[in-house]
Image (cartoon, rainbow, N blue to C red; front, side, top):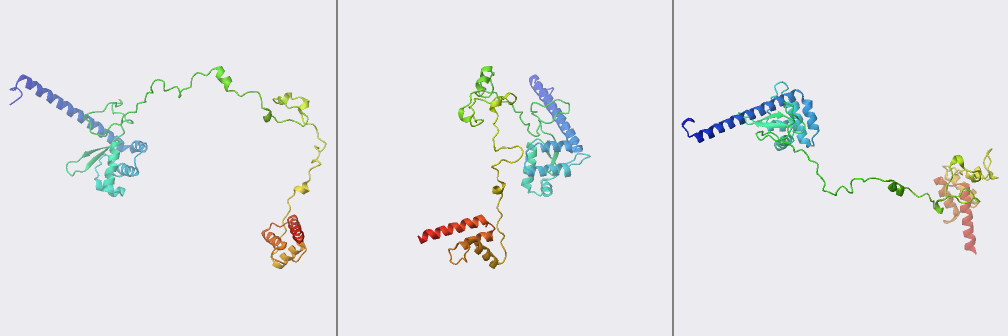
Length: 307
């Protein structure tokens, strides 16, 4: 039965369906043409696609698959790219399942679009950009999802969350007044424990005057043992000089002679002071003062034990 012989309402329904089908076909064809044009442009300028790839947080296997696609499998002149999963896995040294997961991750990230080929069942891979980063070929930014497109899912645009009323009390600063600033300043009154007196007979003051206006009474008095021409009278450099250790000879007999000269005794017995002196001499820590101190202490202990 032809359209002319059907009932009027039936003919109207068939006509409307035909128009919608043709419009849908035109839309899909237009989208496919735009997608192919974009793939060809990215194939000829792959650095744009690599830049979008670097902005993602995909795993390492997905990066290997992506670089193999853009550097090996894509034809720069025609844009043809239809490798099989086995070829991708062998090139990237991955398993077939790993290559499949890498393609799925790239598809979900909006970096590729795949189409099944009819004659051998392999996939045709088209390069594309994520929806938030790319613009349509006519220059307008894509906002809503196209229902007829079967490509990668569009990433939702994040919307800033609105805080409920009254929640900004602790996160936003209120107006700062002069009283608030004055209340935060430290007090000018100084504690007596924190005041350092300037001299032995000088009164304690609350605060030090400026340097350029300091009275003469606050300066330190000249002491009798302080002179600008030389070191003070109580300065004894010979006392502060570090005493050198006694040089230890390599001959054991010479070592025992040095210890015997310090203690004044041959050093018989396991508890004799000469054993301590010999150990200090060999370690490089024996000095004349240390030796004299050890000998005096040893003799004092001997006197106390004898008493």
